[in-house]
Each structure stands twice: as structure tokens, then as C-alpha cells.
Image 1 (tube, rainbow, N blue to C red):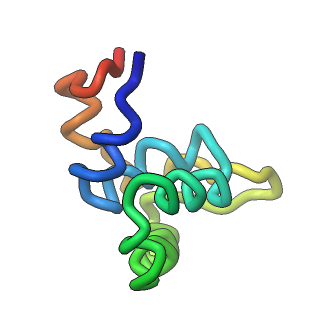
Image 2: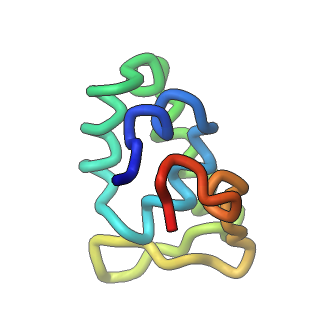
Length: 87
């Protein structure tokens, strides 16, 4: 089972977005941060980071609700190390 609480509390906002944005819609990521790490929402960090990742080409918007992995996308270290129950 994936330990979402620790992912959203311990990992950088950029890494969390890079892993989850191509899989779940932004509003759901926002709600998970509200539950586990509200400071990221209150400070505006989540939205700023998401917009920056789009500008940097790490994520690409399309006509679907989920962005695609961009040409500059790299898998976050917590995923490659299979932390938090990720496979």
C-alpha cells in the first residue's frame, strides 16, 4: 500500500507533482495536500510549482484533464528508489 501521507509531507512539491500529475488531476493533488500538508496550499507553492513545471517543459498541457510528461521530465528519486510502497 502506498504511504501517501509521508509522500506529501516529506517529498518536495516538484517531485510530488512530477510523479502524480500525469496520473491524477491537479484538483485531487490539491485536496491531498489540504489533508496532509496544508501549508503548501496556503503559501501558493503548489500552484506556482505546477506552473513552473509547465514552463520548464517537465509537464505538457493537452486537451485531456491530465498533463503529459514533457521532454524535460525526469522520474523523482523517491520513485526510482521505490520508497513509500511504490513499485
